[in-house]
Length: 520
Image 1: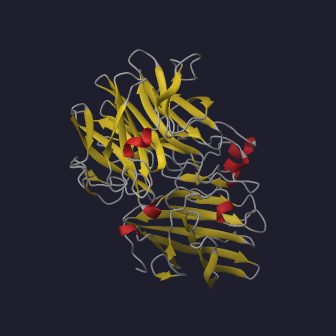
Image 2: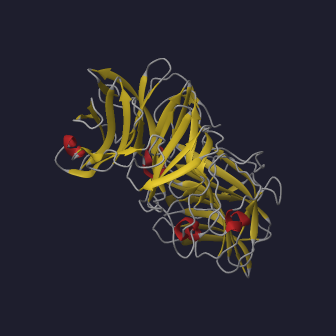
Image 3: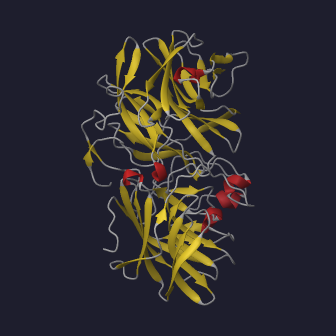
């Protein structure tokens, strides 16, 4: 838990895009997009719509393609699983999402969202879908871009219903936002409220901003009437949620540079059967919920092995030994970049340490397996690791990164001549070793700090030989949100080989704070 404050927008200053939220009793659950990261599709829980913690994931790995495994020059950056729809119906939780990599839409079901187990079924790929269980027992997906479509599923929501509805219900849905559209309306969220069907969509008028639309109808097939319901600071895409005391909110997100796409909680009132978002057309700083706010989806870690395996959907894919359970259970704030190779990381080989072993050769960090990440966050943040490097081999690199396509890192490089502490800046798209300092020890402390205030998007790099006295190294990374990765910057712990396999490093701890401390 990081420093608390009175709740204000953004409610989470970190990359949590495409939120889908439900309430079950007095508990709220949310899913979000994490694309190429594994485990995937986080399950987040809250009691107040402001303080969220990760309690599970939908799956540990989704498939075994070369792209998903980050091998043979293939990768899944910017694709993977997108835009989930979370629903609860008659004691069963449903999570539906599509994977561009797999070319399928996945439907997961469980009776226990926090512990599983999960059952999985698949249908053909559909874009940005939303699931609805209607009052008459029929089940639908609403999806698409531009033309919004309706697809009927079987009553158990496991397959497309033979002979069921399959039609366009809102043609040219972007038209209500103007004649010149850069992004056709997508990101569907469907709700049935007071007997009416409401479909939320987002669009992007050319030269304007991401805009929230709402359509409504008395019948699921239409006819639909629509209007713009929010056009403020690009905050859009999400759905409605009601509280126990009968209030309504929309949970949407805004693009905020290198930190990513961050959630805002928007108060909603109703006028003549239409939802009215915000206050006089604006998203207020005060979300309308009086609670103390703290960030729980990131956390420090001493790398103690958790007592139990996460309740995600488990399956063995690819080389069986690569995906076999290795007895190590990380904190839920962590995600691997692509599929991990479970043979080459451990919390048990040296208790109290994270061991990363080089099982393959890579040209750089973007190709490396077993890169362990968690979110950076705003307005500023700092992460520190203690790293033991006595078992590195020639050509190995290990350390701490601000990770996106245009990354930067501070770490240790091993050559035939010995070890050195280095800073690498790939802000231009090409990695440059900016500074190298000879190093003869076996333990080093590394720190990366990020300044996102006012979208400055700057990262700074430091090292220490004793964990107390810090030294700046290299230069400043100007962080840029790139579409190829389509994700906010992550703190990343890494170890990769460029010449030979078998070298390993041990991370003693990871410490994260919401203050930049520089050389102090």
